[in-house]
Length: 223
Image 1 (cartoon, rainbow, N blue to C red):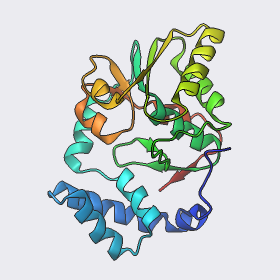
Image 2 (cartoon, rainbow, N blue to C red):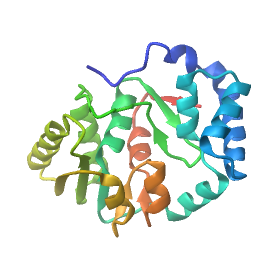
Image 3 (cartoon, rainbow, N blue to C red):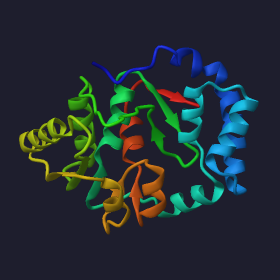
Image 4 (cartoon, one colour):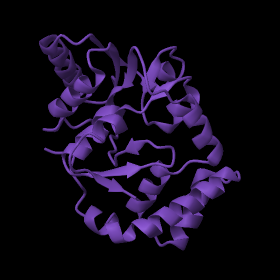
């Protein structure tokens, strides 16, 4: 099993359509900057550009208000001693990139994927390689991984991360928790995530998934 593209993605996220999507992204972000609710703004822009449901999901993951964009950039760091990692969030984006899936380029500079868990994380072939690439990027610095206990297969993922850390002598800890979001929002450590709610609540964050994905030779970036 792979974290690759949806069968419709080549038609929905092709290079020729990137300009129209980028215009829609500007319009939606403009509405958010002026107080429109996310559902209302998404409906207006999605209807205007005749976007499919999957394209609207992508638009929602890419867009943010100007205020949110500026605040997230203010809190972003480029150097760190250790990280608290939003595990599923970071891994799935790298997995998608490795499998040739579409990687969304957000207004805030984050890279995001199109994965949707609905209570189930699928262990894919790219998972070990994605974890290795993150470890190589960390260059031996400590990391505390937070995984969602209620999501199925995260126990197996935790075992994979612990085994890899032991094999490479990486200073990692892995914790299964009911909900990583509030822990990451209130952490005094630098957090690694592209989750918008965490980015808006945390004090410092590092763009881990983007940093790792940018090192790959071929990535399907959109728009």
